[in-house]
Image (cartoon, rainbow over all chains, first blue to last red; front, side, top):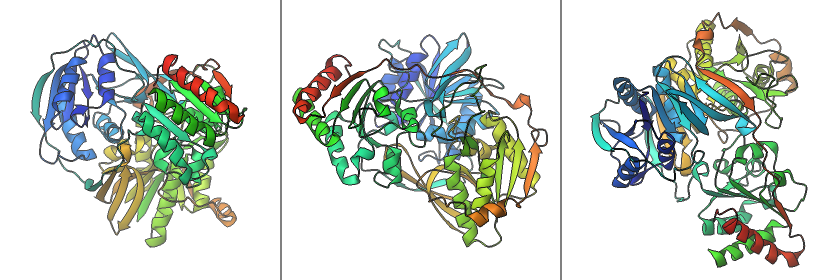
Length: 318
Length: 263
């Protein structure tokens, strides 16, 4: 039977949801989890609940702070010693940064950002978007093991009835090795909103929003829904929104449960980045805007009137 | 100083893509090719460094097909890069083979790289692997998705934004691989004299054989390339008349709660 490892990141006292999504999907396999640094009690409980057999916590000097080389060196040793066939992880900023490096250390293949996968016996095959989601492709990995797979957050969904694993915690001493690129300083964001790529609800503004000022009506709706605010390329290019807010082919690809597009016409590169959202609401003055072809609920009207009215209405029912 | 910039040629982001007949890749005949948008920031950054550091050569490296066009290299040299190395291959090599080919091309160029700049990912296969893999293969440090770049001699201070908006500030010395993203700079347009000059700039052409890449280097196999399923048509409401707004938002709010069950 294939030996499978899921690498997880911490999220406060817990672990990132995408780890639990992956564990749920791997039900029926014996799966270990690895993390760098202590996992909080919430995290340990959830990992066991979703099927982790062994939870390995790597600790060592120079591993308190993330560095691509330190994480890669210590995980490479651990993965090699454990003889794992597959290594899964959520496709987050950190994993995108470090995982290709680890795969390279094994001369092994990595399937980036799959949105679904199956283990047929001991063989992985996945589905991944290409061209920001304009196409989907079946992806298989060849060549030396271990094979590496990263999974897009929110794509698999959480298992409704997870099968628990033993959840045995095991401390592993790890060596970070030589680190040439070091974090000198960390500037913490003051936003407590989820990142667009992990958000469950997104309220997004396009050209119709016109300027930064006007984002306040979107922020009010987003506050109410616990949503993250996004923007289209048109606004980012006009410097009316930050690049970190951009949804689309040269921004972020998102798949929330609810995407509310306000004043977004729906350029092909934008649609590519948000079409996998579960439910799409579009508000636009132009009844022929392409965004309406993707919308579950389309409202033709002036966003400056419709959005505040929607916010008021939702205040009543939430 | 030797700066290498890895560039990829990708279909224009405004273009429609359709799977090819055997589902192994896309139909490339009618595609308009452009330089990968993120690579433009890498080229621009190289030119900004060159403007400050005398004796700097900016070399573009591209792995891919020349069927139809070498748009990405021409654009980069017209912007001001000094020369190019092209490794001719198909356009759907995987990240591992591409990284190995780039490493081979850099070695063949005879120059020792100080900085290797890349776009953070190519917007065709969206793998986001080559810069990190290349750094590993070349035994160099890497910082990815950089949107702020300062340097003094061989010491770089680069910033990258991670999810949630926090910023990691890295210190790193050359040689290093840096992958860059939007927000770093404003890529210049190629000037007309630049375009004319680019035609006479050196372009070294290599084969995959020359850089010791073979079929055995393929790690990722794609099949069943297909268009995503279209959603069934949704419900559309007219709120152009102000009198309707209240009833429309009330209905949509109800649907979100009771039909879609997302709030």
